[in-house]
Amino acid sequence: MKTLSLFLFILFHIVQFSAQERTDYLKYMAKSLPDTYAKSNANLFFTVQISALSKKNRSLDSLKNINIYKEKDNLIKYRLGEFTTYKNAVEFKKMLRSVCRDAFIVPIKNGKRIHIKQALKEVSDIL
Image (tube, rainbow, N blue to C red):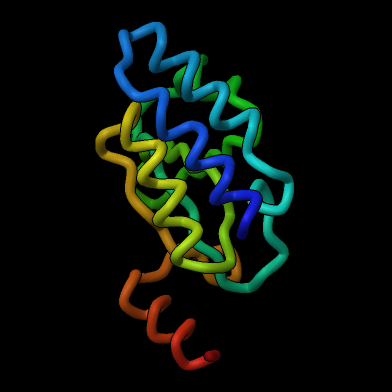
């Protein structure tokens, strides 16, 4: 948690971007994601969706640590991070919003997307 907080604090101060700077920043964010937040073995985790497109995007496809999903709606979903706590996902989403204004949190349980209310209830039940 301290590692992620420090990581996000440092990155938070680099915010005004041109289109190229946004791409570079997104690459940096994806590449700099600590291994503990890149992939989770938990049954329930939170990830941050940065895009949903009808066709593949080469720039997004090439990002390190990007998770690509094709769901029932036939859209290709691009997501970063797999956080076991909602709080860590929210912190990461805040950083991504400087370049991906529509970024939002998606809970995944046993490999399938679930509703955020259900995920938060399950997390609170565990605590």
